[in-house]
Length: 55
Image 1 (cartoon, one colour):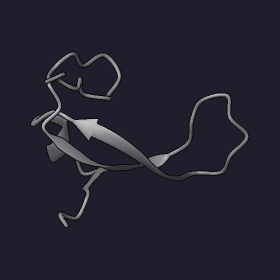
Image 2 (tube, helix red, strand yellow):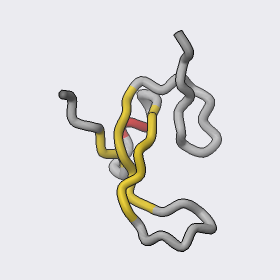
Image 3 (cartoon, one colour):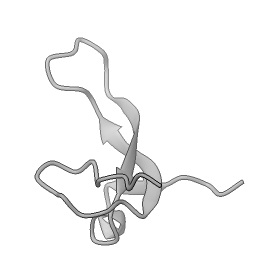
Image 4 (cartoon, one colour):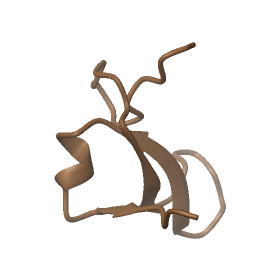
């Protein structure tokens, strides 16, 4: 099984949660929107992180 790394800039921890952040991709002309990310336990607690709903 391949471990997924946290998507937050500079973080190399193992991701434990999938969710979204509101923003845009740098150098893209797209408007801000919810971007799918994987987060470690620390970054999953940030106010800017929205956990994905479990199905």
